[in-house]
Length: 215
Image: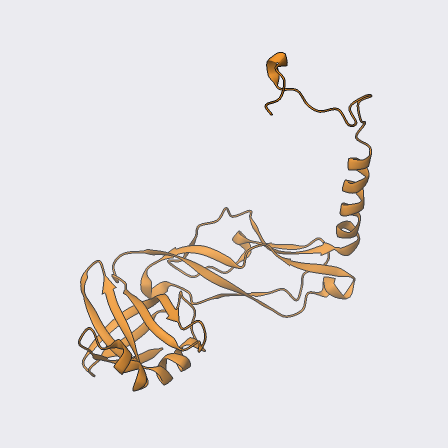
């Protein structure tokens, strides 16, 4: 994805917003901070198609191109219009660690048998070079029956992409509905079975050492 931007002077954020432009800053460890303005329409289109782990190209004044990730988005609490956007310029030679969103595709066959799909991880921390960072992780759950799981090691990780979770961690599983339903009653019965010591009811606890409680 790519958006166009223009250099802007500082201190004119309000005027830019009235013109349909969103103030933004590009920054990174290996580049000087750059204040730009991005058309609001382009940002709206961008956010419909990317996640925070999607590499985005920003072309400034039609010349310089920066490869960035969405770092922070400030939105007006009432109008929900963009106020400011922070864009992180990644060093292409240094790996990044980012939380990549998980998207589940299909309907698990275990649901038709009365099971419940449980998403254990909605995001998976990943390490990769900026150009290799996946925008999302799609998982087809169609073949999952009751009791089945998809583990981190089962996913088709691309070359240069390293998940930062244990390989045996479950990402998604299909649990039996009955097991979930009986869990709460069993816990309640266990609580009711706890014996009460004779004479304990209505007795006020005394502090250690036998001293009377403070008034």
